[in-house]
Image (cartoon, rainbow, N blue to C red; front, side):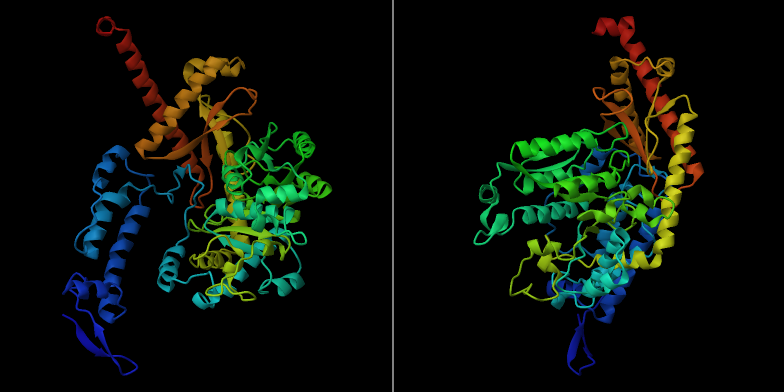
Length: 567
């Protein structure tokens, strides 16, 4: 079923036979071998499959709705079988499966009506680059499995470092391609970037000392005992991302030793309370491994006073890690970058590429002010990451990982500083427009003025609007509003036309004791226009009206004599 061809070297090679659908035919051995072949016949089959997938993508991304109204419980029924197919499935058949059961019911994050995701829409050039990244299949753990992609990754990381730290040209000429320097580490996301930043902070605070090997070699308990500490802690605000809870657990601190400081009325870390937390830790003889500042909280996009945080950490001799996973790209904006003043003196900074850098999921970055800082996590293995080599795996948490730096490098080149600045400026403008529109609608309450491009608000039913206007809402009213807004957000998502997320706020103008469920709109899609804001808000009011009508009918039915007798 295969035919022999002459190769460029003169040796015979086999080109698998294919059927009219572009798939391999023949024996099981032929069909499996063909899946890995680069012969022309199989490249034709690949191109045919690629055309079908491209058509599927175009149809999916061309829809305006966020998803279908099909319930997840119905979809689950098509995925109950756990049998691995006994025989190979033709590629065409598998694309049929994706076309019928998977892709139509995915969430379209590219539509401007999808405002519930921090995961970005993607620029078109990412899609062909994805094919390239996949086809090259470089392993960034070492030079021998990546070669040219290693200096490319170093260059991309140096670009981000320069965005954050703004060192001079001589600095980057010295350190960007220096194999003994680490300006940044590429990770699978912000969670790992935050973990690596704290990992380095721990190893610096509890490192080797003479014959003592440090926390890495001797363990956390031995290191604390050696340095005369009763424990270790990381301090952050109560608005910090949950990845810091996981980091505290994984670094052996325990979640209880992630000290969460209350926020002020703007959801920023309370600096007075921070100083008290530092004093209390030291009174308990806890070494403070790091203080975490936030440049764009997940809930509402608030930014801590980074300049004051940096001054406190310098005075106290504490590592400052800034989680700028969301807000970091604001540095591209000449108009708004001042909001992140102070970030340039942080010891480590996280930026998550799949958010406002508009990259695929799997492109997180942690940068270090000191190019030598990450040496405390260096590992070597002679069969793969050798001492003194240019292997990126020497200082990283992950081993094998893909060449996602290609996406970062491409975006920084193709979109550029001015392009990113334009996107950020427009995102923040849209947030202001949406906030103004919410304030103009009596059915909605703006819960806080947006600091970046996340807008927090809630729906107010007619019978509570006068009480809201008179500032007379009571705890029972808030409980009712929380229930209603939770149901409203879920109902809108199920309907599939538009999408905003929801969150719980614990410090609003209603006091710290009152939890408030908020609808949360994320304005980060470069395709979003003012008219899309109106569509989304109108859809929320339509869903709310339908929900209240159903509840009213249900209440009337429950109060009827027939219903009373049935009870």
